[in-house]
Amino acid sequence: MTLSTPNSRRWWIVLALCLSTIINYINRQTFSVLAPVLSKEFHFSHGDLSKIFGAFQFSYACTWLVGGVILDLVGTRLGLSLAVVWWSIVSMVTSFANSVASFATLRFLLGIGEGFNWPGASKAVAEWFPSRERGLAVAIFDSGSRLGGALAAFAIPWITFHLGWRFAFTASGLLGIAWLVVWLAVYPRTPRVVSCEDRSQGTLQRLASLLPLLKRSE
Image (cartoon, rainbow, N blue to C red; front, side):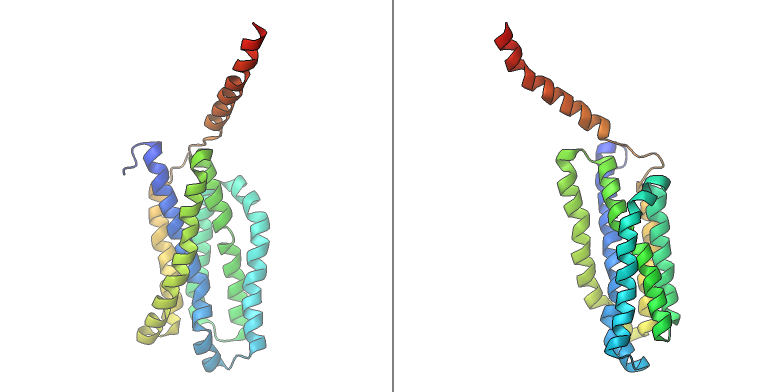
């Protein structure tokens, strides 16, 4: 596949969205995988962990509610770019956290950035894929959530064992910065919106459905 035509470009775009979803899940799972290590080092109780996990879930849910509106205003290309940069920086800064308050605050900020991924990916699919292909496109990028969770379960412990838990947060953040280069290369400044194409197909289908009635009237 090349980027020379809209037909080929859209599949590169959905692969980039799959990668962003993989990285999204690696970032969010980093703390979960490291929870036993961090609990031991900082003496976190179950209550402390619930506050940290809850901070992420709250901001993530809130961003889902407003993320689509913001993306409609700034556009998919810029919106997802800023979101991934946001959560990548937050992830790297988390390597300096050392208390319940600092972890909870950073997890809250992480949820704000990561909450844009699904609205942004869905908007990109709507902009580039005709309705008959959107189910497949959504399935491709959504599969990144499972892949990301699986990769985090293996990669984060390995990094922690060899380089320490702080570098695990830094490494997961660097993935997002690397992804940004790919995203800006494959997603053009002016997206190809396929809604007009869908409407024209729908019009032709409605006209075809009227042909039997016209024949009866002759």
